[in-house]
Structure formats: structure tokens, C-alpha cells
Amino acid sequence: MAGNNWLASPRSEAAVDRILDAAGELFARRPAASVGMNEIARAAGCSRATLYRYFENREALYTAYVHREAYAVHHQLLESLEGIDDPRQRLVQALLTSLRLVRNNAALQSWFAAGTAPIGAEIAESSDVVKAMSAAFVVSLSPGDPDTDPEAVERKARWIVRVLTSLLLFPGRDDDDERRMTEEFLAPVVTPRDQATQ
Image (cartoon, rainbow, N blue to C red):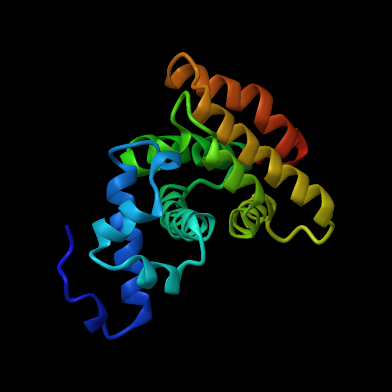
């Protein structure tokens, strides 16, 4: 449990991180949907009043946690794509790396636990941060293309997020199966053949 010197934190960002870190520790042990605000306050070493000063409700805390972790995953994902220029290879690598990063993180994996409310999928679908990161990734698959239709980018970004969350909730048989599904059913839609480098 965190120390009791809660209000001594010099910055609100540090306080928010402390709360989100405590929440993450709880999410690593149980499905995220089952973790309540009282437990998070106790784990963070603060009162409920302090917790609610930073997060108006559980949904706000959940969203902040997902956004923070999404940025971290996105950063690791971009590092894994360095040197991969072919749009299809980038897309396949990005999806498989994202799956691995979430699955290897117990706190993130709990958002997609079988038998619980799919709050990870719900937040991913509604999050402006996830939408923006996904759209930026779609645009990166065809850099310099002045004819990129914003509506098509948005649809492709949503499709990538839906495929990702679907595989997190209902995994393929193994890594090879997920790679084949991504190559056969996602890549042709998001990166048409004329986009791929030869």
C-alpha cells in the first residue's frame, strides 16, 4: 500500500500517476471491471474525497488509465516498426505487436478478461485518444498521399481497433493463426495492393 503522505505531492500530475499506478496494480490482480473506487483510494493511500478531486467517477479514472497506457503501448509499437517501410508489413507487425504488448501486461490484459464486461473494447471504441492514434497510424501507412479521404481513414482506424479488440477478447489458435488472419482479412482492406511497396 502507498504511504500516507498523500497531499505532500508537489504536482497534480504526480498525484494522478500515483492513483493510476495503484489502479494498475489492482487491475493486474483482477478484471478491471471488478475494481471499485474505494479499493483504488485505499491502494493509492488517499481518501475517497481526494480520489474524487482528480477523477469525478470510475469511468473518468478508467478512461485516464486507458489513455495513459495507450500512449505507452503506442510508443513501444512505433519503436517496433522502425525500418519497416512496406505498409502491409507495418500493419501486420503493428497489430501483432499490439496484441503481444497488451497480453504481456497483466493490468491491460484484465480489460479484456473472458467472462467480464468488455470495458477495454468499449473504451477503445469511444476514446478520442485511441481514435486519433489509430487514424495517425493509418495515415502513416501512405505518407505523402494528398488524396487521403478523412472518412476512409476514420473507418480504417475503427476497423483496426475492432480487429485488435476482437482478437484480445477471442484470440486466434496461436500466433501464426493471428498473423494469417491479419494478412488475409485486415491488410487487404486497410492497405490495398496498390499501396504496398513492391
